[in-house]
Image 1 (cartoon, protein in one colour):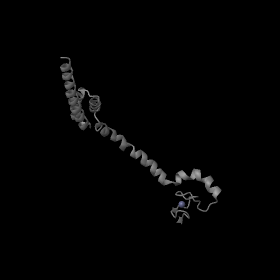
Image 2: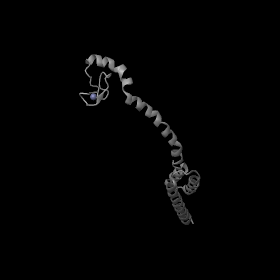
Image 3: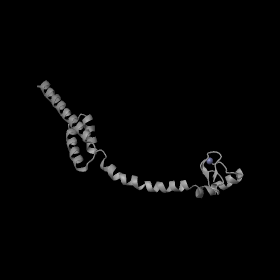
Image 4: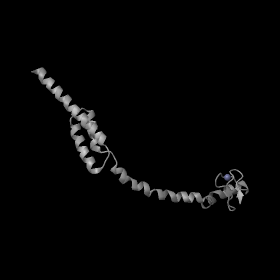
Length: 139
Ligand SMILES: [Zn+2]
């Protein structure tokens, strides 16, 4: 078995050059280069295996999206958090709705929903205080 002078890997007799590093195996360089293009695909079995591996891997990621979809963050929880940041009491309402949805769908976002609920009630309290102060001032 011949061995590549450059990378010391085993060479098949029919190879005009090393498939690992491209070093010619003794055939004149111009011939090796000319033969290189048609010879590479059939000789490079690792490439064929790699090509087989890619389609074999594709079904696995394709089977993941359903699980990923189930684990995505609940939209209502995000919406509730945004409302909470806008100091809206609606955040508490949307947070509770989000918790209900999360309980049914198994989505993520329970923590976000609770933060939104807390923000919502704080907003409600703040608005009540503001409202009472307003009416106290004009009274
Ligand atoms: Zn080599």
